[in-house]
Length: 341
Ligand code: Q9C
Ligand code: ZN
Image (cartoon, rainbow, N blue to C red; front, side, top):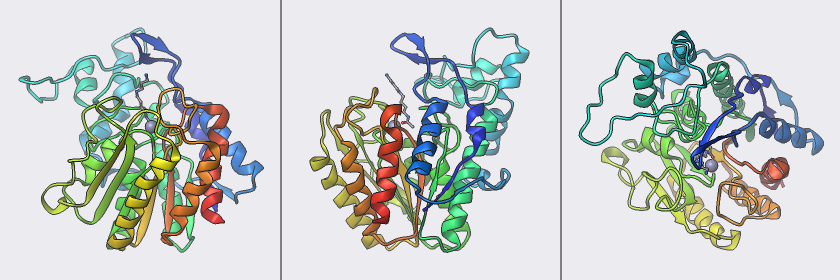
């Protein structure tokens, strides 16, 4: 399987993440992508390609123009005000307030985000654009007949809504790729999100549509991020009614239980008969992940990949979360190797 990778991921070098009331070094760090790339090469998964530049048009099929402009200018606007640190949202339009876009950068940061852990810094825009281009380049490989491709995206994307950043995500690479498949003629696309966290952005983007089926397996949002979306009674709305599925699991969930959800998801995808499949691939389901509570082992990821391959669909993998850097390369490449067996 071919991998698409951009060294520009390195432009995303935030130094702060708000966690537990203090600013820590971010979990979502450059070594994540470099470790995965190293393992891809070590295991000779296949060629590693640089991305093409698709410009903003495919991004704007999913994200709003005002959100994209905000992201593009955010760091400059922040710096122009002489703020001492990184751009961190700290105020939101809470219940009873107005969802009105303010001029001030602190107001705009809150308007366009849903969480405060993710700071915007100098290279964030460049890295987010490179990450979307990585996804779109891998998507094009699959659209042009490769059975599967791996988009080694960083920063990740599945938490980003049409006009919200958060959860380490800015552009929703999986959603942008699914929309690209549709725009190139695919009738139906399925997105299966196996990251530990609910793919809230992906769900929200396609919630009222039946042409993109969204399924996410994740930790119970009653207990864990993103807290305010991802429950099992969210099944889609309007035309999208019946085209979103959330499979929620408690702390300590091992693969033997998690794989029942995977089976449910795979059966739903098979009966949907999509023309393409996008896997939002996070490996923060790993037993030693520092911010998560599932108990998957490295060997389990081989079985995950094998089951996904049985769907026998043109498949794009977009990289999402996974924060145990020591194991991230092995775990990700195990999914891809399992898929190719
Ligand atoms: N105490 C992805 O996996 N909250 N994003 C962390 C840690 C944010 C995860 C709290 C988690 C975001 C792509
Ligand atoms: Zn995650």
